[in-house]
Structures are given as C-alpha cells and as structure tokens.
Length: 115
Length: 116
Image (cartoon, rainbow over all chains, first blue to last red; front, side):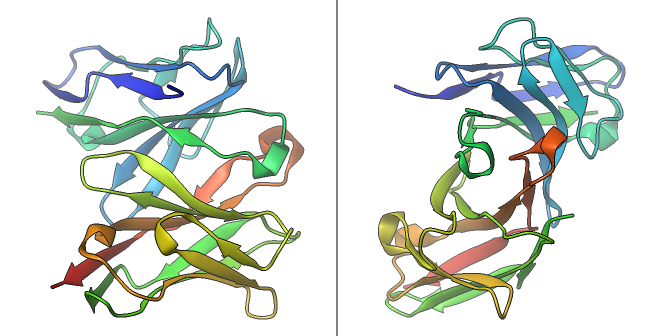
C-alpha cells in the first residue's frame, strides 16, 4: 500500500530535550516536505527536499533541522524544543514528474507537546 | 506569489443540505488548485484538483468544485451533506516558480459541522 508513515504519532517532551520525528514514504517520491498545523493558521511549511541531499527552508524553519540521506526518509529534528513548537506535524511527499499538478500525499501526523 | 483565502473558518449545515465551502486564490499565472480534507486524527487526503483540463472538477465522496477565473474562485460544493462529511477542509494553490515548483500554499482551513 502506498503510504507516508510518521513516528511517533504522539510525543510529550520537555524544553531542551532533543527529539527526532521520522518520516518514510514507499512511493519513490523525490519531493518531501514537513508542515506544522496550528489552529486558525492552516498548514505552514517548515522544510522541504527536492531530492536526496537537497533541502531548503520553508516558511517557518526556525528551531528545526532536516536531513535527506535516503530517498525514502526525511526526519525532522528539534535540537532544543521549546513550548512554541507544540503543534501537529505532517510529513508529505509527491513525485516531481508532473510539476505543479502532482498530488501530495500526507502522513497521519505527529502531535507534539513541549512542556 | 500564490495564495488562497478561505472565507469562513467554520461552516455548519444540516444533514441533507447543500455544502458550500469558499476559496479564493491570488496568482500571477494560471493556477493549479487543490482541495484536501482532514478527518479527525488523520492526515490530509486529496478531494480533487484543478489542472486546467476542465473548469468543473469532480472529486471523491460526491464533492465537486468549479474554477471561475473571473471571480478568482474555486469553491467546493456537495449537494447533500452526510454526517461523515464533518471534517476540516483545506484549499491550496501550487507554486509556479522554478526553485519551488509544485510547492503548496494552504488556506487556513474551514471546519465543517453536519447536524443530524
């Protein structure tokens, strides 16, 4: 089954404790992206990756890091989480063949709470 | 730059009533537009997309949307609401710039409530 998986689904942590949220897709997609969703703000892009070893900042990259060492994986790293990073996070992927028209597929989300 | 505006953060309808969720876009080039749905505790799922092939686009679960260039709109409709349609709906537009081609810009979402 074609899918994007994220782990963990739920995470409660404390300020300053480094954490990683994993994202994996099995569709051989080149493009992957991380979003955060906050009430009333919709989805805002954190980082994206056009392919292996190619990453770039989205709209709200502060406090986050990413890496793309393999095509299927795109982990999101919070080196020193703060309470304002409490949010619902989504990973997404799509192919690059169709350009603007390709459908983006989303993972189930990771709800992060930073105390 | 591309952007979308969703009018109404909350919409409530009775079961069987018409659903109308509004989306207006801003784009310097012909836009490619998407509607996604998010059911409780789930990720986003594509409902339909406009890619210039036809102005009336039919999607899953009985939803459709009509692209109106003169009104810069892409409103989502369904003739008869079901309880299972209760969810949050997002309109999005696809970027056209070379370095970020295909990146999605989302509206703030509309929460649809369906009353029995």
